[in-house]
Length: 436
Ligand SMILES: Nc1nc2c(ncn2[C@@H]2O[C@H](COP(=O)(O)OP(=O)(O)OP(=O)(O)O)[C@@H](O)[C@H]2O)c(=O)[nH]1
Image (cartoon, rainbow, N blue to C red):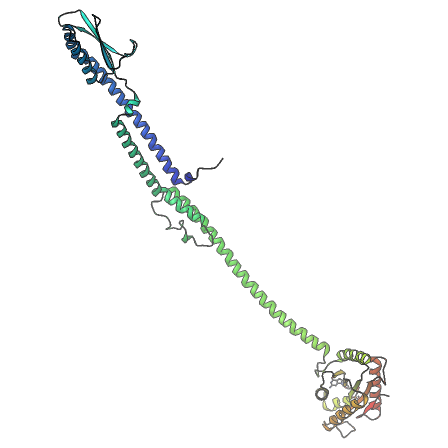
């Protein structure tokens, strides 16, 4: 059982209790010693007093007996008992007289007593004998005396005062520092600086006991090394966080660059670099999609293939860069003329372009494309090798899907437009040919 009586858990209460018990033990020892001394003293006094009795009383008692003054002898006997604090006294005369002072029944012959003989002066004959019983000397009787009680109370008070004084001294010199250190250890927090605790350099008063100062130094050492480790870890954490933030920024930038590249790639994958129009791949996908829709919805879909005339000769005459610019210029015109959400114009390759016009039948598409062709020619872009007014022209092949003329596949529609273009080229260029 480790349970300790609650009020005695603290060092302070234990010290106080220890000092109190020590005081009580001191009272008992000193009291016992004093009692014994008193008893010895009284025994000596009683003995001395009894030795005086024959000298003081033998003669007066003998005279009183000789003159048969019994009452005077009785008074003398009582005076002797009371003055010398005897327990009792008995006078026995040779003639059978018996006087008694004190309790009626005297203790037997074996009890501690003293006797002296009564003789008349000048006569050796004994006329009687006095037996004296001394007062019983007991420790209990001594304790009952007010002087003894007073002395004991004083001793007790002194012991208590000394105990309390010693407890306060111990508390001031030792326990106070221990309490302070204990409270600091209880709220010890390595993230707080050592200066907030008693083990900081100036934390303890100079008069603190050396052993406590040693514990203090040990705690300060522990705290400082924990503090240093903590600060090192915090620095490492900060560095790590900065590195992570830097990496995150770099990652973010790389991700943004990647997104741009991906968008560029997607653009490149589906658009022509020179003109910015959709490329062949995008055009083919749109053609498949729109062809299925036209089939499903029984709607119309016009497809035109547009091919600049004599570009090879233009390049040779005006330079490849000028040829590029011509292609870009024609792409812009296409974009401007076909700008419905559903229209799609694309560069199919080289000098060949495509226009996908959902909802258009052959006639309406033909009208639009004819006006485009004429506008292109009216731009009068010089072409030194062109047989048509020495300006740049374009040939167009047109095919249109409709419920009345249902092509079987997107490929078939495309081939029809290509064939129509072929016919336009061979018919002299700068014209539109409609697939049969
Ligand atoms: N400048 C330039 N020329 C290109 C480009 N792509 C193709 N060409 C040229 O276009 C010319 C096409 O030549 P051909 O197929 O003979 O056609 P054409 O000379 O236009 O004659 P027709 O189409 O029969 O009227 C070639 O000389 C190609 O080099 C391009 O991106 N830029």
